[in-house]
Length: 376
Image (tube, rainbow, N blue to C red):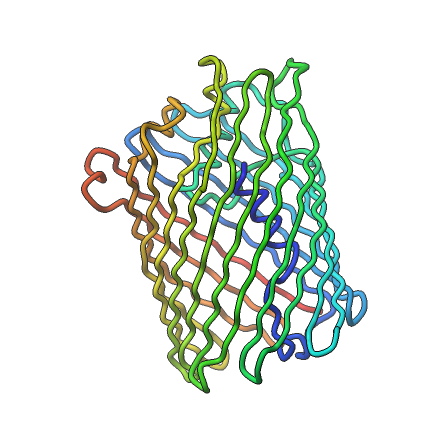
């Protein structure tokens, strides 16, 4: 559940924005529709999800952009209750203004409660499974109630080839019904996201981006259960090299939960207990073949997840995961340009657990997607 809100905050604004990129001409309306299918197998069985996301953005004026995002999804698996339908709908607006040599963005995002809440206990187990970081499901949450997220960011060039930026988003979440036939409300805590970054050109051969973030989470409460996530520190380095037919990409990121406590007074709440990975690291290397009408990207790398002590939930999907998870991802992503403002793209990713713990906690699966992006 936390992953969904974190993603919403990050999408609310651009932390580091190059003034040169902003000056490029762009379509006034962009519509992006896709289909994403995911299936993963563990020692506990198979978990599947199909997501049909829809995104749209409209350039109302040279300085104002509005966007919308929603999806229809269905998920289930072995011994899991099927969960499906419309997800929450996110709408937002961003105002960009030039201030001196820099750019200031002010944004306002809202997540509308169009997704399913008031779940049965069996559906809660499915929802908890979808939120597990290891699976990286496209739809980690169907419904969270109303979330309002105002934000501000600024970018400033420090030289002809480099710019720095920072920003903040504060997310205010409303209470909502979590369990069917239960008058008690689930009360998610508010969140503050602070980011900073640097973009720098490496001569004519590439670009390096360095980003850092800190998220301070409020306490989540449901009846007598309290979950205090604390805060999360994150850092990312992206390196892009090459301007010709063959280009390379490198991404390295790390995320660490700085503190957090969990108070679960009875086994009754195990189905809704958030299961978090205190340490998460990613290392990816990609090669892109760029042609006038199509691109092909090849990417390989690792994701690692570490737990401190035993998992804080005894539900089967959690128990089937390794405490020290190392996942290998290999993907191919072709993209075909259909004229000046349309693009057809696809991705196929194979994931497999590797390392010493993979024998006792096997994990493997695929993610396939196809999408069409059209500008008007």
